[in-house]
Image 1: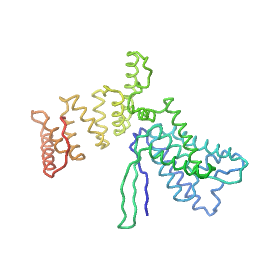
Image 2 (image 1 turned 120 degrees about the vertical axis):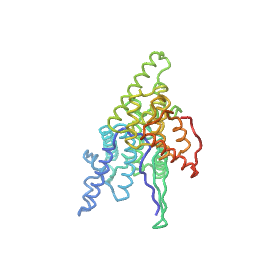
Image 3 (image 1 turned 90 degrees about the vertical axis):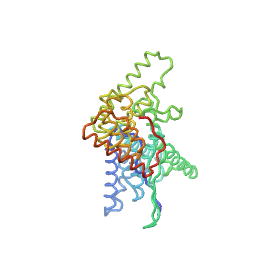
Image 4 (image 1 turned 180 degrees about the vertical axis):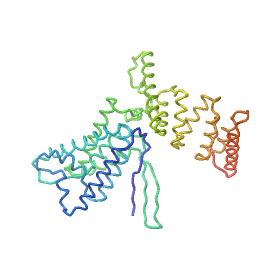
Length: 389
């Protein structure tokens, strides 16, 4: 048996996925309730009835009904990853507004255009999930969705992981549904309903982006299309701005970024703060955090054990404040040896420690790190380059 399952994303998340998790739990509970119900038609009252007039309550309830285990698992898996992207950028309340807004509008359109048609019904969160996928395409086309895949049975089973950019995942599913819709004459079936949800999501994502209702740090589809991803919003301003005006705008953006980082650090979201800082530093050339706030960011990242994003920040501190970087050098060497397996780079970092005697505790740590680095070197750890940190 072969399977593939989306489990995460590398998109920066500035809000916890509270609404996403709650909606997944609600969908699962509703499915379990109607599955265990002794009345096989109990879920029909919640479905979206076609050809029987307009029923606004069904515009909400039908989004929580699913036909079988595969239906609900598939929708919830993709709700999880695309919910991470969208809610991670806009937060709980605006995400709920987007989620229910897409669901209600799509269901209202579906019932409206089928007035007078033969009686039928539809259900499921697929159209909403397609809408969230389309919004993710607009806001984060180059971010990856992480998949796990496997196949076989028992001891012969195999599993692996792979990544697919949001852009190509969205293009694949939309093209697949366009192909199906074309062969079925664009009848109001699953493929067309998916495309309706995707169209609504594109509109929502585009309007919010153009009205600056979401901050994509320059990695949205517009900037990606023009090859200027990650650049400051100053690049979108008219060239008629004076140098003084551009300086003022850049200062406001820098201050806004600084306040956001301080907020994330205060919320103990060290990893998110570090990712946000790295993105804003690329978007605002020459901008850096003040020393005190950079130290707090380093502490927050260390507290979160987010060593993969810690190295660039530690290196920045070494370069900007070499005379004060004793503890930072030791921490950087620890991380390089523990997670990066870079013994030569760690030895280079340690070689630049002050020549004056260290405290007994720090001297013991230095000797321990040097010994570990030399053991890793002796083990033949591959290391492509050593930088002058």
